[in-house]
Structure formats: C-alpha cells, structure tokens
Length: 568
Image (cartoon, rainbow, N blue to C red; front, side):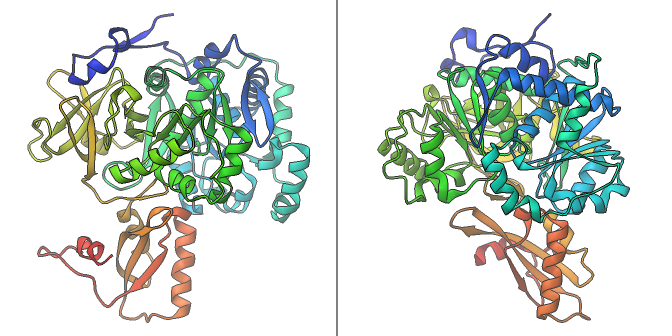
C-alpha cells in the first residue's frame, strides 16, 4: 500500500525538527483501518478505562465489529451519514469507528444541543441513523418527522458502567427518563448490538485518504454555524504530527479524556491520538471541577490535555495540595490561548506538584483538524502557542492587502498543510472565502485570527478578527445568538457581548430592545429565557439579559458592540 507524503519548503522553525521529522508519512486508509493497523500487536493493552470498567483493544475491536454489522443489518451503506450525539462513553467510540469501518461519515453533535440545533444538524447532513444518549429521547421524538432518520439508537451512560455503579446511576438518573415502550424508529443499545451477532457478512468497506470521514460543527471564521467536513487523511496526519511533537508518549501511557468527542480537540487529539498509539483513554463523561483531585489520584494519567478553564479548575481545587503529578509527562492546553501571566501560574503550580514539564500550548481550529501549531518542549517560548507541526506551513499577512508581513508584525494567521479541511458542507461560497489557493497551487486557511511570528518562527496569538466569545473552551459566536434572539416575536434588536467569569473565562450577556407593543415583565423575561433554552446550546444561553430602550450605534448606524464590551 502506498503512502501519502507531504513536503514543504524550508521555513525558519524547521531548525526545531530533525531532518527526518520534517515530512509526515500516513497510509491512505480510513480512521478505523489506521487504528487497527496501529494496534494489531497490542490487543491486550487497555484501550478505555470508563469509570473503572477497563476495556482492552481486543474487546474494543470486537464491539466495533458488532456495531458495524448491526448498522449494515439496518441498511447503512458506504457514504451514508450517521449522527453521534453522545457524551464521552465507550459506545461513542465504538459507534464512531464502526461508522468508519463500513465507509460511512460520522456527524458529531453536542448532546446538550437545543432541539432545533439537533434537528438542523441532522437535516443539513442528511443523516439516516442517530446514536444518542437516552435523556435526549423527548427532543428526538419531537424532530423525527422533520429528518431523514429511520433508526435511532438510545444509549444510557450506564450501559458500560460496572454493575454497582450502573445500579446507582439508574436510581439517580435513568429511572426519571421517559423512554419508548414500543416504537419501531427507536432501539436500545443492547438490542441494536444483538443485531450485529446475527449478521454474518464482512462489513469492512475501505475508504482512502481524501474521502470524507467526519462532520464537525463550529462557527467558522465568520461567526455563523458551519458544518466542517474532514477526511480520513486530515485526521490521521495529525496523529503522525503529534507523535513527533510529543516524542515521550507511548503505549504505556494513559490520557485523561475530559474533552468531548463532538469537539475537534476532543475527537482528534484526545481520542483518536491516544488510541492510535496504543495508550489508555480514561473517559470522563461529565467533568466535576470539585472532584478533579480525586480523578487524578484514582487514575494517575500521564497525559492531561485541556482548555484553559480546566487548568483554572485544577489550580482552584482546594484538595490538590498533596496530589503528586510526577507521573505526568505532558500537560497540553488548547481551545484558547493562555496569556503569559496564566501560563506562568500554571507552570508554577505544576512544578510545585512535581510535574516534569510546564504546560505546552497548541493552536488550531476545526478547519485544520484541530492543532496545527504546537509549543513542544524543544520549541517552547513563554507566551507563544508554538511552531507549525511537521508538514504544515504558516504565514502572517496584512488583512487588507493579503501581503506577507515582516517578522514581529501583527497580521492575519494563514495555515496550509495536509490537515486542512475538505470544506464546509454544501457551502461553496463560504469555503472559497476561507480556503485560498495561491499562485503555486497551495491552499491556505484564513483563520480570522491575528498574531505575529518571532525570529524563530514561534507564533504569538493576539486576538480574533471577528467577534468571538470563548467559554470553557467552546467557541460562542455573538452573531449567532443575536440571530436567534431577533427571531423572537417580542424582540426588536439585540446585542451579545462576552463578560468575565471566574471559571469559564467568559460567558455571553445579552442586551435586548423590545418591540414597542411589548413591555418588560417577569412573564416575558421567562418566555425569552425558555425560548433560548429551546433554540440554543446550553453554553450559548446568555447568563444575563439587560433590557434597554435602545442600543448604542456607530457612525454608520451599526450596533456598537465595542461600546457595550467597554461597559464590562
């Protein structure tokens, strides 16, 4: 089988890589085949530790095969889109790789998304099957008739728990959920899995480097929701790059899996990467900052990836004083940048707890399959998010002229490389705005972010060109929230800004102007809040609503959101 080879011209950061590290070789195969080939000789290693339930790679691949056969028994074919709307559980991993095995495309959805958001994602991607957590049953019943779904698989977080823990979860959670007694469109995980046992045909349907594998959802660089299509090669190449950037990691390691699989960082770097190197993925379906110390004591992970808010929770936990982190090889921060002050604070904390390295930062976006720049220990510069990963290229350009600027000068960050997305789903106009082909035929991603490069090629993030709120590592786009708010019959206009939050860094705050025939009162406030709960993901719902007679305007008559931001 041939190999994909990506080469690039020499750039100033290449001195941080050995000559044989400047190219990345990735076999042209699916995510499932890549995972299997990487682990064919370590089937007895623990692949997943889910709340104490340890699953070997042998068992994992057996379950993937059963799930793939069950999907084929229900008519799922190569090229079909299957949606996965799940927290971090073994079933989410199994379903994800089973979709890849049969040549399908996995559409990843936040399980706490609003009903309308789930419907839109399923409808836009033309999904025909859905794997979802059981507490979403009511939402799915309400939208089923407006989609192409013909089978929904309901999964409980307790399906893979140990027996004792499963009983406790049932008493505390599952027994409160109203589930179908008889509905041919719905099937429980146990019954669906049984379908695979009775399907005796081969289900492996190989896909190659440049075939679509995953659809993830983000605001894109323009701030409006986008469905981002990534290929097998886009994602697999990141694994090869990560192995060069994190050379100490191996199949004896364990990674803390807090970041969710519907998030690019959580899917690529925090799920596919550890499993592809034969490490153990410690799955955490719901993170509790107050119990962070117990998590570290019990599982002793050697790799801790997270967003800046995770490290804020780590440092603010009152029970961390005697927690020893000497076994931790890497602490990796992504999803947002750490400024120098916070970076130093995290480093001091890690050093005080005997961690061998300080935090290393990464920079990327869903359009680049996650991390495309990384501050490995060899290229570490305080305040920098790092250098391009092997095979990637980077330049800083004037946002107006698109001409490359000098070292140290701020401009828009452009990235090229093998992890660059295939494009936005069914949106050629927006794709062409973001992906630009230069005179040499190289495709560059316009990130919509401002930054500068130092003399060593290290990237320093400055700010975003577009309005954006980062809340607990999630991108929250004010323009999207405003669009939803302005559709409410009582709202004339709105403006959303980010306000500081002690743990989440920022949360959205909405300024609202009502139509003249409506008056602010408790009932209307409650209706607007309920409307937001139905139409926005939980992390997008404004934490505060301010009702005003008017909003400040710029000289050209636009809402002056910067003035409202300044008020904060």
